[in-house]
Image (cartoon, rainbow, N blue to C red; front, side):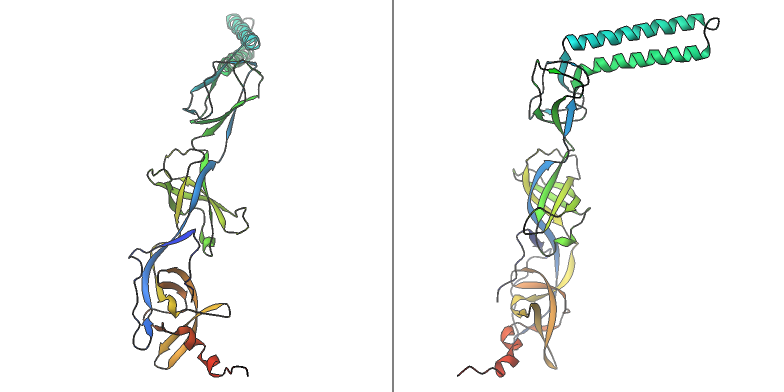
Length: 330
């Protein structure tokens, strides 16, 4: 019979080693054994953007001192570009004039208090002064475009000398925490995968493995079905967009499951069976099979340890009744 094989995206880690060969007794039966295993899902994975941060102009001006280039990794607060030109200079001058006027008004109001101004006048003049000062600070800060978070410059949407206005996207930044790992997993057991599961990412370049956690599980856009997982790093690892490698997700803790030789399994009418042998003879027993490694297959339901199953000519013995009543056509 054909040996049952897992899909290439699922692997089984046997913590006590792979099951070895078996030796059937004189009656052709072997004992069902409890064997330890740990089910893991393994698949090709790649790093892709989780979110992209657009960096926009906060003032009107001309781009100058452009230091950002695609692929450049920048730290928080690092200078990316400056805004200059007549428009920007005029806005700064107007904001400075309003601040200076508010400063004079506040000083006059304080000088006239309490003879010619009230507490309300003082509060109003102070509020105008603070707003004018804040506006001047904002326009000055807008002249220096800085990275709000550490990340990598993806694209530039302008060039040096170009005139921009408030809201114009100057560049796009991929934050260091703005990527995640994506992989598609296939197989009958992938329904067990859920957010929160732990695993490891092994980069293709041979770098050290990175602990990861399943952040989300969604159906992949594939004909074959399965699930798509998005994982985030459990450490401060810095990933590059497009980086690839192997993702391994631990689907279960080490557990003990009954195992039988592959030769003991019989497929009949879409179900798996074994032939149990006891003092009363042979009995057909339906089973739910699990992963198969080497010459052994794990059984989820249907048999217990130390029960004996037929492992020699199981298929012929299973259909012995049919053989006895079968007559070849004339």
